[in-house]
Image 1 (tube, rainbow, N blue to C red):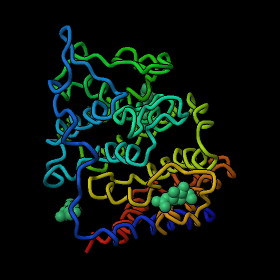
Image 2 (cartoon, rainbow, N blue to C red):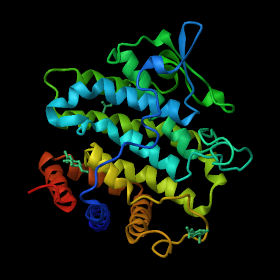
Image 3 (spheres, protein in one colour):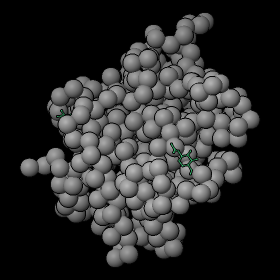
Image 4 (tube, helix red, strand yellow):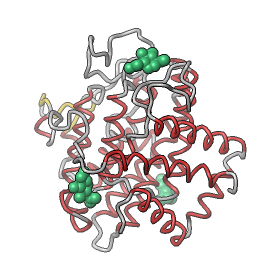
Length: 337
Ligand SMILES: *[C@@H]1O[C@H](CO)[C@@H](O)[C@H](O)[C@H]1NC(C)=O
Ligand SMILES: *[C@@H]1O[C@H](CO)[C@@H](O)[C@H](O)[C@H]1NC(C)=O
Ligand SMILES: *[C@@H]1O[C@H](CO)[C@@H](O)[C@H](O)[C@H]1NC(C)=O
């Protein structure tokens, strides 16, 4: 952990630098938020069911918009305007994937996702899109199952991708079969949210448990996608999946403002083979440093056989340590007094 700790702090430092650059401007919604469905009836209706195609950007973003809207009431006591809703992390992340070109067909075999072709298309060959499926459709179906949306499972149809249909699931029961634990962990999050006794820390704990659980299956099942990317991008994808576990252990609060600022440190386009951080000339210093930190974190994790994560989780299992980490994080963010 002595090896690890400095890198975590560098990462925190990088993220905080992003904030300094951005003070004073208002936080915009994720891309195409207003164009995405806000309620079930905004989706196409056919044969008594609402048809959701998560391989269309606005359809998938709409799942988030509905989730954010319907859960606002449970976050109202933590701050105004749904800013404190911890689910903001997900649509902002998905929005960054879209804006940075990570949802396009990486093989170039189709025009899926490309500005000049089918810009709303989300490619099933995109590693990012596949992983995000389990962070969008799965939480949505778990929310349906938990009753929080006031929608029943038989009111919706989730359309399959053009390829690899058997690697995904499309309804509550199918997903309980494919990724039972992940569904259970998301359902637990939505059930906990509805308890009068729920608190912010508990919400964070449940959220991050569900979030990291969502990554397990797709990271296992879609390693073939790495071949479609440059070595640099493939490494970034692997390191990203590792880093999420460390952020999860620290219960990073993914509220609207914080998540939006966090995004500024992420690479604004897909990496190519000549992109060697910290020397990527048209990336900001911050973006270069975040990539360096993620590489260091990923290397440390692999080198220690995840013992560094175990050590980090052990430290962060103490509420006092988490508070210390978050307090420092907040101070870096410049939002505490
Ligand atoms: C979120 O950021 C906006 C400006 O971007 C600011 O006006 C608002 O107070 C912030 N909210 C919180 C809870 O920090
Ligand atoms: C996630 O769900 C599984 C049940 O499928 C359960 O055993 C596990 O304890 C849950 N994880 C947490 C941390 O709640
Ligand atoms: C940024 O750098 C990459 C790789 O060197 C290059 O392909 C791309 O055109 C550059 N973009 C801009 C906006 O300069």
